[in-house]
Image 1 (cartoon, one colour):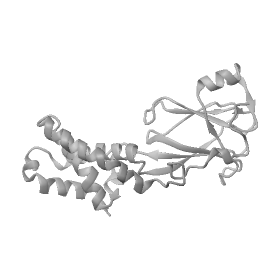
Image 2 (cartoon, one colour; image 1 turned 180 degrees about the horizontal axis):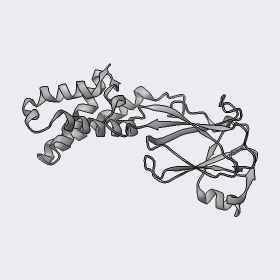
Image 3 (cartoon, rainbow, N blue to C red; image 1 turned 30 degrees about the vertical axis):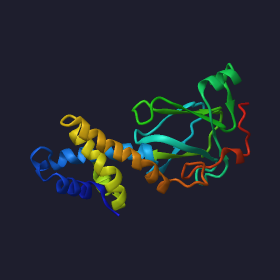
Image 4 (cartoon, rainbow, N blue to C red; image 1 turned 135 degrees about the horizontal axis):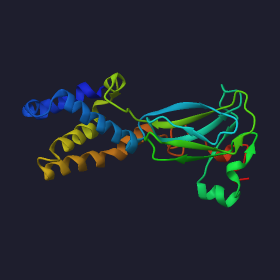
Length: 228
């Protein structure tokens, strides 16, 4: 394991000794950040959880910009132990078909969720249905893919095995470096990186979790998947 920003930069400098005259360390760090976002999305490589406190009468809740994909949404009635129920994904069309007045429908606890807006955008929200009529300490915990939003200290500390750096990060960065200089060369680097991604993804995803680390099978939830 090694820090991707420092080690990938060193590997690029070794592969292209003259690169320092064209790309500064800061420029390479920015390209490594772009590569990290691609790896995170394509390889499901970085999972975390976010907790949201529920509010009486609220349907929509904002999501952090760093959230780029949702694995599961689980209810915690006491706000601490998230073991009470798994919420089911749905669409606005599902809600319209189930209840024409769904926006006004209240309930004891939400049973379904719908993602609103593009993941990773400032306007990204989650809809929790039905809205709660009374709230005490209830929260939901969202297991989700995480993306670094900038070249910050957390990204600088981000580590990956050397073989993952060599097979994915280095060719991705090299492809971006040469994208406006030598398109054919850039395409070869990109092809190499994307061909390696399925193998890299298999390192992070358990075959017993439905493809999603931290995922909880909603069929085991005490509330059935049908909209009520």
